[in-house]
Image (cartoon, rainbow, N blue to C red; front, side, top):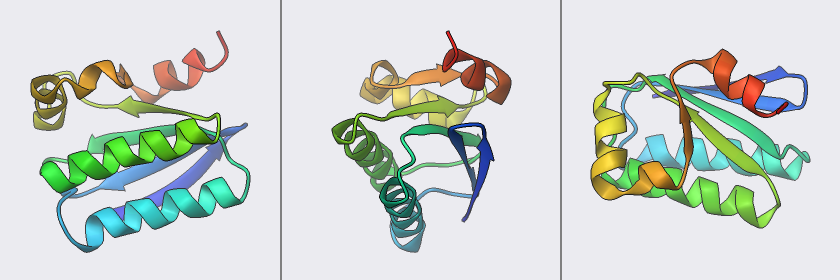
Length: 114
């Protein structure tokens, strides 16, 4: 898995590519987010368009990221394909209600303005 960060104004876009599963993958996401929070970033878009699979550990880490950001008065929004397996997992577990989920990055970024 790879995690890259881009900035669009005040929003940090966290591009995640590859499987988000138990092990180093979830640690990499956690440490990236912790670093961004320490730098004062509070608005995030997690771009998960290139995540073909997320296991329970990845799901738990994504939820933990939301909790960390919320504690610091921040927001995480997700970008997922409408019919992705990751979106299905979020729906099955009920976590789709915990996140604002968008089909594309532009919509997610625009939602911070309105």
